[in-house]
Image (cartoon, rainbow, N blue to C red; front, side):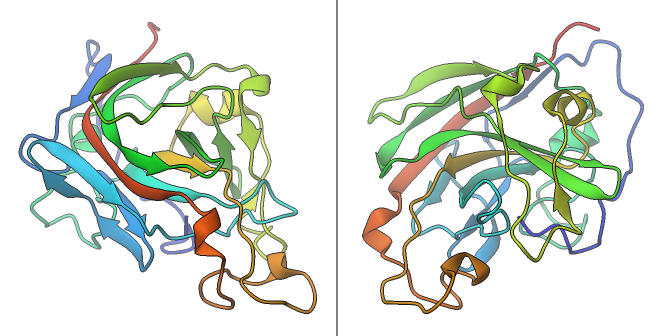
Length: 251
């Protein structure tokens, strides 16, 4: 994800209601502030029949290419501390960020995330799971929940994962070689204690391979823009998200 725009999140936090312990979005009227990425970059999320839809081909996020944790697809993305919606550049659009607007907390420690999903996905070794991103000090720290994931089936299913503070449940993505001034490493408990940038549904890890010989280290280049990739190694298909619910742990 490109966190260089604006250099750091705009923090327009509201007072959090004492009983605001469960966030639910059913996408009945719109995307509710959620966005995503296709192969062209950041886009608003499509909604259809009361569900948010994402379809391949997806953009390859190379911001954490080796020596970082690897490549990923960003499917559904929600800012946690700004009124902006992914895929828009202003707060004046028709799709409010309801998470921010209604003042939900950013302490995600031991929260559960429940998703109602269906679709058709050739995963090619990737898992659909969650990514948590927060700014710690002067860098963004990204962790992927690699010990828990969601299954995609043709019929609707409701599945829940827990955002534990156990480092063994997560993979910290670090940074590619030329973005170490933007991305870094940090403890997952610190990220979840104040998840001050965004939460995402992602596909990870990706098997990114050049479609022709490259002299030197391909991880120093950008797949899709600086070289073509073997697309049959990447995930393909579509996923519908009918409902997402976040239950925050009691204070």
